[in-house]
Length: 506
Ligand code: 5AD
Image (cartoon, rainbow, N blue to C red; front, side, top):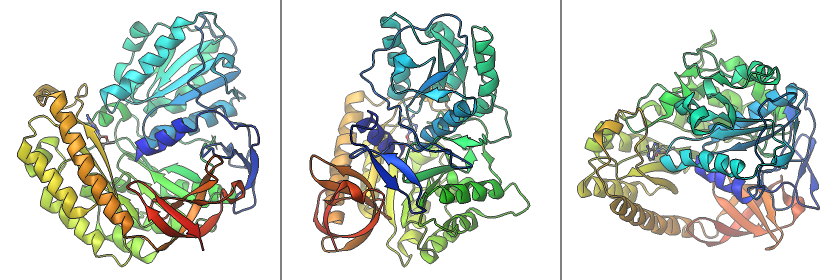
């Protein structure tokens, strides 16, 4: 799920091209969008701060080396890696920077402050920030005054970051983002290195202002951190203990984004359905979903990522009863083999997982399903892997995100070694993806002739096509123009591939 959004972001990196046009949200608020660009931004505050041009995440910029003391930090540039939580954390961090009077810039070399919000979920993701920092080092006519690293690699490496990358002067994990204004003050006052690395927080990161990058979907964090301790996963070590936001704060933010013109909300959490209301209102997660879906102006509510362990039938009943709750659930499986699930410390068996799926399939609405799978976890036999394949064939997911196991520091599985050869992991991944491809072709073909309401998210000028998304999270392309972006339209499917559908307007 997370990877999907990031792919879209990377594909749309440059800022608004010439000919950026005006888009009106359902509440009539004007914002800027670019033809073909999905993620041109709106800058949002509690009082609808206004719109500005986007500093895109242009990779082509060859950055220059920072100088030693920061001095006044007036401009900033943020690049984000990883999941939707990270994407949204960056939106909130940018809100803090705006509130400090700083200005976003599109060109990295124009920035006083460069921040990388990092991801550590797999080794490859963690390496990305070091290659960026390496690139910064190579070109040395410096304008950048300070470089900071945020997120999971920052938390994981801590003070060691300064040794690996001496050009870095700020290292801050997600549990300490509310300290960022003070840390920046210290940098400006001449302190060469500052850190925010405490993990023992009980608080959520609340901001007055959020710089929302996605003009159609407002992300709202409802729960931070993770207490699950799945044996493969680094997140509990990098994001700290689980803490839920009070329902009142969440609902107030939902009303704010609705006032700002958003019609779609995505509730976020590492384990979103482990949310429980710390306030006296005492709402359940399913009740919260319904309350958010009832906010005037909101037409679509999604939530990610759910853990099967907390996926209770009242969530399914809520989706069934409320058309504003999208008929889409992402329920990571990780493995179809009970012994592997036990070693992963997932807290459910194959059969228990399948019961949850059965519950979802019993709903009146045809709820679309997606999942995450890890192949080649330590000790995974061919037979274990075949259990995963058979589960995928049984469930027939609409989408599967699959990954080769990557051992992570300080996780319980780290000590168990990484005994499946890289090539074998690759073979298993390819085999799984091919089976899933065929399932998706079949499932999508079955939609021929069906009509869907889509929210149009982009227009591809080269193809003369609008790109919409259904409530079931399917991407649907159809002939359209830039004026369609931001609208809800009904389209009828005329052809289907494994990853997207082609349609005509009805
Ligand atoms: N190796 C490979 N994939 C991982 N994931 C989490 N940790 C690892 C790891 N160490 C995958 C899981 C999770 C998704 C976000 O990333 O499938 O659901």
